Length: 350
Image (tube, rainbow, N blue to C red):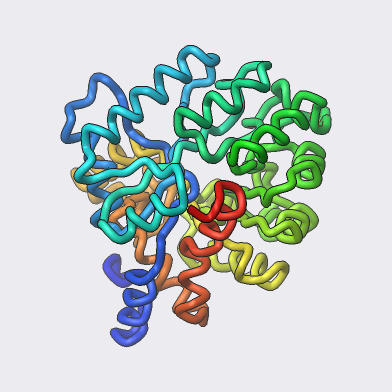
């Protein structure tokens, strides 16, 4: 395989893919950033540099990442706001759709705060407005286990949405925080989609009909989220693409999920998300560079060859979409246009 052209596209098709990519607002709808006090500033800024070099307009970053309650969450939100403010030449905190467009226009890294769970609000619904004021614009209702709101996808009881959870969703709709259901249990997912007046999203998940994994979503769930205007963001993270076979799933394996969902609900309800933990992937990329003999070893490869968990190579997804026969307009929608539509509904058109 040619690592620089993993899909074997012709020069004409590669040029078509690049043109569509360059025109698009590109949104990676799930990404774990790299903000740690012990890191040197250049390493912290590497995340922004990778986004800019890779043409990724916006990342939905797991902020806060901590699951230890409101106080630590506020500290983390403050640290990330400082991280962005002190690199204003490279980054912008996206609080509005205009901020997303500005990030594209100015070639800066747009950051959305999108925690994977609701530990940051504890059991206080009024905290929804407070975390919105600190920059949260997407919030996952549960992680894998049970919380005050409902059940995660690994809870065997599969309980539904709590009364508190319904109050939280109403508050999220009121303030303009997108409801994210990526890790929710099946019953909580169904009830949350119904309860939300605004479109919901799966920020990073694949189709369970293609690969039966508890983190993937059923056809009924995908249809339900699409019927209310939402989006499922498919991920190349191998664990959710196919069963492990000794190496990472190739790019073509992701295509099976993409075509299944498009055939099910249409192009307008599909997005993309890498689910990269940047701290871990930075180490893996360095390790593979220093030890090329390990390339392809399942222990060191969570992403397909050609992307390799490196945001600088995000454009390969545009090449995959060209190979699959999608038009430039459809590619732009999948890369980020569909999510912009959801954000306009939830946040307002500004």
